[in-house]
Length: 460
Image (cartoon, rainbow, N blue to C red; front, side):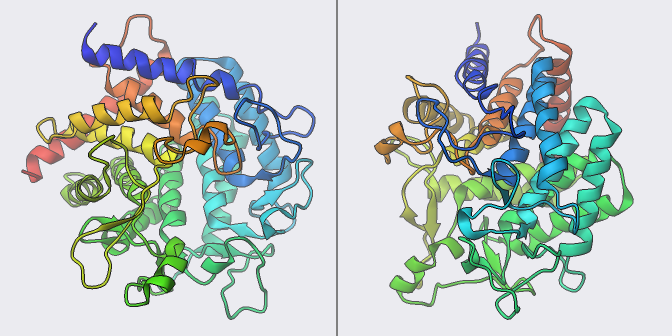
């Protein structure tokens, strides 16, 4: 078997045997609907089981994609199970929009102080998941719910003056900031009043998925706006995303503050390498679905984002990407200010490195991909209990007994990376591959070939 063929089998084994069977059907909450949230390192359900829109939607997306990719009907059933919880419980029937959090049973929850608030980020993932489920089932009810959520986002969170979207929304559907009468007690309240890259890139992702199954002029217009905004305004020309912004997209920076203040505001102002190369991939997807021809500008910036992460955030000893960097005042080089390596950034690194090795075969990305996979196998994959540790145990060995699942950790980043990489490692469709794998292979190869042509035309 060729090197790529052997790696493909490793990826498929990591998906089929090390990931999916540990999660599903364990996470299915048959009594209350939706999916369980909190699970120990050895796959025991915790007593507390709040349900957040992000993780609930991510399970719907993953199950939908796995059902299509592997031809497994039970995953379609599990995705539909989650959709019904989103539709019947997470959606606010009075004011519209998806609640950020509910209790296990679907009522109010005190977890993280979100109360009845809504977030654009969470609503984006709901759209993303329902678009994927509709792509699988073609159930018109699913598309209707996705369109309803899209309309709510556009009517309630879009800024028609400066463009982009507000992140913090009251139950009634009104954006709020620090000057508002409404005061949040949520765990993310320090971000109130700012626009941000994270909700923006995941709206880009969600609208790309939705446009692939519903070609609507308004959706197309807003997706193109997001792509331009993220690429040309939110991304520093050196190749990294700025994290938070004022309404007019002036970036929030603590570079001129004291080291103590800067460290205290790390969450608002640092370089997140994982988000950079994840966004590089998402921008290429968006441009491709929009049908933009010869989009050298987007490919150039996407490549610059991955190159910056490799030059500044890559562990040259063990492999893996660090969590945080910073350009300190008076310095022209990027300093690592958080040297841990969370699981999702390592998964997205696999996807981005292999993709760019295909687009730029002579670009030197393939050795990084090979080393990244070796890093993941040695420090992220749990050899005893399955799935991925939350962070690389070279830096955080306590994750050996850390939770396998919580509201921010499930199967979306890992599942996507493994499915995409297995496809990209298949020069031809493997013997016995099902209809879903064949479809995924053909679509992704068309995607890669599209960007290879753009690269040859516009980038040396």
